[in-house]
Length: 479
Ligand code: ADP
Image (tube, rainbow, N blue to C red; front, side, top):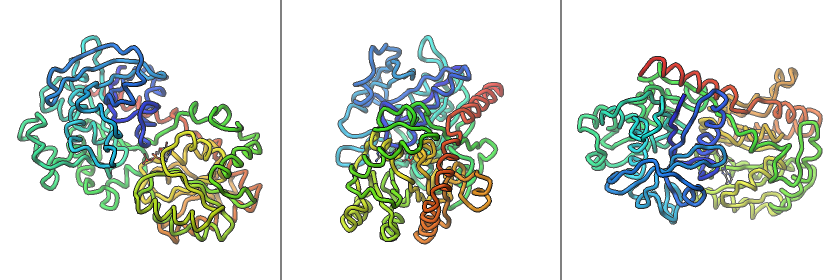
């Protein structure tokens, strides 16, 4: 089976969050099911710099007014198709934001172009390769099924995966005439309170919708989590599937991770201590008996970083230490910086994005805090499980599906892998932390939780199989 995956970021080429991890790891996991995936991504500078010996596969003389080429290249096991359109993607900022942190004014065009190019390839316009199915990710590629339908391109079955319904790709309605979609599609598919919503358009037109955990699939049907699209999701409920993400267990393996000062397994947990030493000295925090908590996160309201700021004093007064790695909302960053200044030697913070440091934190901290208000799947808690770093998580979305709470029954059965707290509020979080401190004092119990976590299956194995089955059933239905 041949699949075209389209994504606006892909690890290890370009990453701002979990979407990149999924877009980079799922194709590798699908090879075990005889599925050949080519992944279409924009030719950002970071991508163009690393692709080696690309082959020209297709040209567009006029893709939204610019010249563009599809290049094919192989990179670390991935078969990449790169949309090389310098006028759209050759810029010094990030994938979505310019150097000052503002959305590019022409994001509507950049990602319509990506979706359009994807639809053309999916429809067989690239000679020598035609996919049996197209798998689009998030709003940036959500117009792909729309282009196939409304431009009368030969259609192949399409899947749209929602990685986070909070990001919808909404633009003023005056972009619509430039999208190259017939007028009737406006009200039929993309109109959302007088604006154009790319995600809504994709949700209306993809043959199947998936999201990244079973709990989140339920949650987005409700007004609390659907971010205004719950009605659209409800109308597609028969075609909605929740499939939890896995992680790349080669990249994230404490037994062989080259980024760590010390490697270890569940049987040699004591060997984590050099990692803890390096971590505490890197963050300028004391390396005494109290637990070291870590946070690796975008600093946003979604991630509950304001809740974190509210509980820091309590963490410190209970004898805990905290290492924070993140970037995002300046106000939240300020609040966390202030807490670090207030608690010198107990709370340390690194502002920025640092993949290598994130490995050290998973391998050195005793626990990771994930107080998200909503969390489609969440990956940091999965890395934490694998690294024996106990996840303390809000009971929501994928966090609910992947962590087994250390309640009495689960502890007695030896099944617990972390702590879930609810409600998702500062008080709920404090309660969860109090339980964590209590468990941590019982070294035997804590080790049992660590080991059980390390036994959890966080690989793509089962989930890749579910995607493979879904692909197969869509193709057999002949959409
Ligand atoms: P989201 O995609 O919503 O940000 P996920 O938990 O799904 O959240 O994925 C986040 C990914 O980004 C994980 O791989 C995590 O380790 C990584 N990450 C987040 N913030 C940072 C950071 N400041 N430095 C390094 N890695 C980070």
